[in-house]
Length: 229
Image 1 (cartoon, helix red, strand yellow):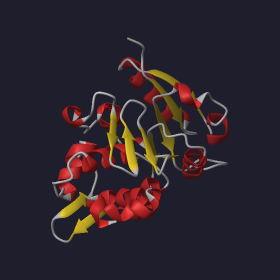
Image 2 (cartoon, one colour):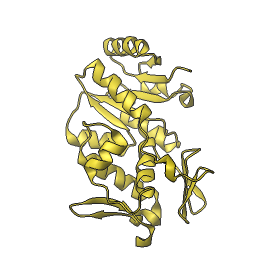
Image 3 (tube, helix red, strand yellow):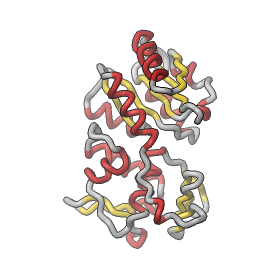
C-alpha cells in the first residue's frame, strides 16, 4: 500500500522538524516547506493532505488556502495557528479548511486529527446505486469521482462539504442535529456547532438556487429536501 503524502507548510523550523519526524514515524510520506510561496510550487495533486501554518512571513496560510480553493483544488487542509479564538477558527473554515489546530498542540493530537480527516466518510454505501450516482434531479452526486453536478455543471466542493451534502442527501427523511453532523462528518470532539453552520452556509452558496434545499428546523437541526426549492 502506498504511503499517504502530506505537505507540511510552516516557517518555524523547530515545529516543522518535530512534525516531520513524528509523521514519518506514523508511516506518512512528508514534504516540508517553509513558505506558502514554496508550497504552491509543489505538485499539489500528489498529496492527500496539507498541514498549513496560518501565520507565516510572506503569504499567509489563509491566503494560500484561498488560492487553492479558487483553483478548484480541494485536498483536505488542516490549519496550524497560534491564534485560537472562535472567529479565527471560523475564518479558517470559511476559506475551505477541513480542521483547525491551535498551538501549542500535542503531536498525538495532530496525528489523530490528520487520521480523522483522511479516513472520515459518512457515506452510506447501501444507498448508493451500482453506478455510483445519486440522481436527485437537478443535483447529481457522483460517489466514484467525489463530484457534484448541479444543472449539468460540476461544482467544486471541499472534502468536508461533499461529505456533509452526501450525509444529508442520502437521508432526506432525517433531521440531523449539529452534534450528530459533527459525529458523522468530523468524528471530532474539537469541532463546535458554529463550525457546522459555517459549512452549511458555504454549501448552500455553492448549490446556488438549490441552496434552500438545506433547511434548518430551529431547535432540531438540518435536513435536505429539494421540495423546499
